[in-house]
Image 1: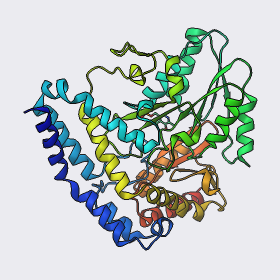
Image 2 (image 1 turned 60 degrees about the vertical axis):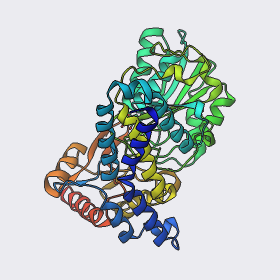
Image 3 (image 1 turned 180 degrees about the vertical axis):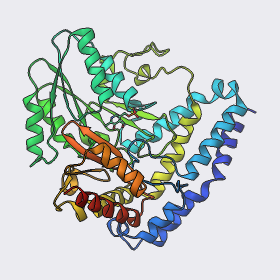
Length: 423
Ligand SMILES: Cc1ncc(COP(=O)(O)O)c(C=O)c1O
């Protein structure tokens, strides 16, 4: 089979699962008189989306923050890709592997609103951001700024640089309920001095779901000559944005979270004029210092995952980016609004609409987060994750597009009962 025939075969395999994307198009056409916000409250519409998922009956899954497993259509495409690559063997690897990876990367760049030569596919956020941290030429005494609420494995990479090169890490703590953007901008600004070279911020804090004013923090940092690296693990395919609007220098994300690709897919964006300063972690075939691909030497890897990125993007676009964001925000507000003001219940996520989307965190007075998560699972059949540290005590609640308000009613009832039992 030649290259052309293979590509044709792949696309005819794609056709076999076209119906889900077609169903989404039809669904949206049938509902086009409604705005995205109106549709976010339409349970009949979202019940159709739910049908596209295979859900375990054992529990209600409110822990999609770790990994948003794929809808059946994306999964079927992925399995087809695994079969096809296995069928082709090294022929695939020696012919269209790289061309196909580029195509998937270009689709992600289009989704992110950056140029094709500013984005590569990685395995996850950790690999993306650690590639940047490791790519700097650090001198003893150089400083980096980050928050206590940032993700541990990335903070760990900065610690490694401290041990290895003698850099100094300045760690601030983000309030769960900021009064204004300025408060957050000033907080980061207060940690910067003439030795600061890199500042890391989360687009969306993973333990609380708080969305940070990324652009304002980037503009402040740039005015002081500091680069900004954004941890976008939870933002891509959750909120709708263009990376260039954020004004950041680097952006890393995991695609197996809200884009719902199979496990082990991520992206790294590097602003064009920053690429030449970074050292690759692994020596590349590509020695052009200005080419982002120098950072992308992964060796032999699961190429079928690259192919499935296209399917996940198709699904997301067919659903509608704003539609998805509106639904996730609606679901969060649906349950937080019912418990936020109750005695003995603490919401660790800001109330302002634009400071959060689908993720929120709730604690119960006199109840440790681990006990709360355990009770939710054993007594109420609800799967969540306990967060106990970094200024946050509670369970992180992450619904997905398949979550129904009926499931959230059950969760709200559980939280109320647990809180009453602890008074
Ligand atoms: C904010 C944040 N950054 C980074 C990561 C790491 O993601 P991955 O394990 O996909 O690299 C996570 C994972 O949950 C996260 O929440």
